[in-house]
Image (cartoon, rainbow, N blue to C red; front, side, top):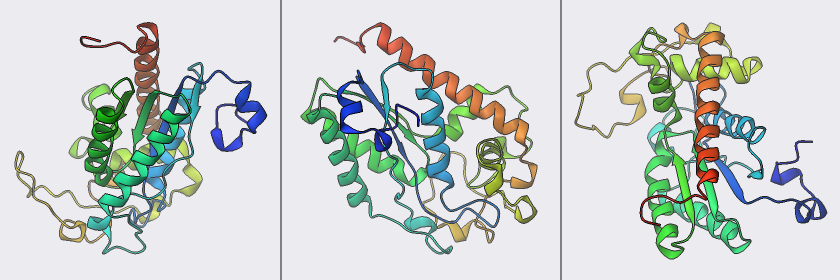
Length: 250
């Protein structure tokens, strides 16, 4: 048993602990092409959170949120979705439960694009209600990993894509037994504009349930992604701890 996983701690064990911060993984349950499991977004965010907690003192890992706002993927089976307002409410309730029990330093590891807007609304509203609370969100790990890795790490579309080169690579590093590479197919939606955001439904972009090119995914790329993400989050939390989570004018 890993002593930082809340769902595995007894009441006695928790009372003896010194947790002063928590990390929450937010994922989804949705189609990820023919080659990745439906829980990919949850798996990646939760596994990264656990790796971080191994190296950060007093960091409580919460059970992940396994459903997200996935309506834009719902034409691919089998995708299960919460409404945005439902997800906003769930996140707010979890954060306020933590605050009630004295944990006011909270890190959120998001694994799914459709959760970004609900997370923004929920965390802003909780921050306004509880000004002393410190909330940090890594809203798009797939973008962060691409920025942290050397140019040229990925072969197609900078590794981006739903179930694409990057996401498939990190799953090969985290849960290779769940990946079926022989079914890896995707499409790069290179007909989208650079700056304007077209609010697409996913089946308008690809017939495969995947964008980018998952066939270019490798275990080595995934290991590099995992390493830079874990290192980045650990560095952030330790630096915040060192300055008592003070920033700006506070």
